[in-house]
Length: 341
View (cartoon, helix red, strand yellow):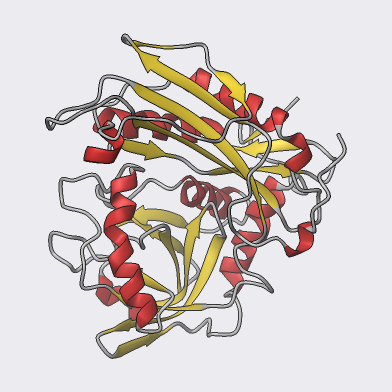
């Protein structure tokens, strides 16, 4: 497959329209067989459920060209399961998980020319999503839905390497104690927009949200989970019912234990513990790990020993190992890599 004539090495992290996308409609209580289309426009009623009551959920993953030249997707089965959980929480019909995987296969195959070559630093970002599409004026779930997935080539999230970030402890809550913080719904991200714009205007790269009930425990940022390394080399991530179960975080914990021989655990992390941490990172699909060098809480600064120049040593090992697995340089655990034939 001849690749598109793109300056792959200088791609930014943004949307670029590709040739094809996948669409399936849910009407009369059932999903249709789905289709690949070149039409990127969506037509819906002005009263569509998604527009009136934000009934939409989504996922994000990447396709890679490995060192062997294969096109692969990283752990899409977990994205399928998470989308199903999100749909149930918003009273939406579940898009069957096997159908989800088949849709991703078809989408990537149709856009093989857009999958960046190995070594370019770029990847094909895949965005599956679904939403209520029929008119809904009373507060209730929609009856008809559409599942769609598009792909767009993206460059590395951080050009020139990931420099440690300075973040702030937010005065806002990202989610309610018994709310929807643990699902990947558009409404959660809308709720974080004012907080992130406020943080940027104040000179910070991101927010640290504390638990909404006691505001004493670390939760996550608006779009990524936290990962910490203690001074004795243990990897820890926050445990909470109101944060998104990150696939990247889950994978990094496994890598820490099984590949690097480190102690690793998911547990509640008190904010007061942070002064004793050695390293901190934000983990997610886009950047894998974004290092954090400084956390500011109303003028009080917590400076991580790993510093503001580069990733800490343990974080770097985690990053290199996971990206090595994704790119085919390191053998992956069974079931982690889906090859697009």
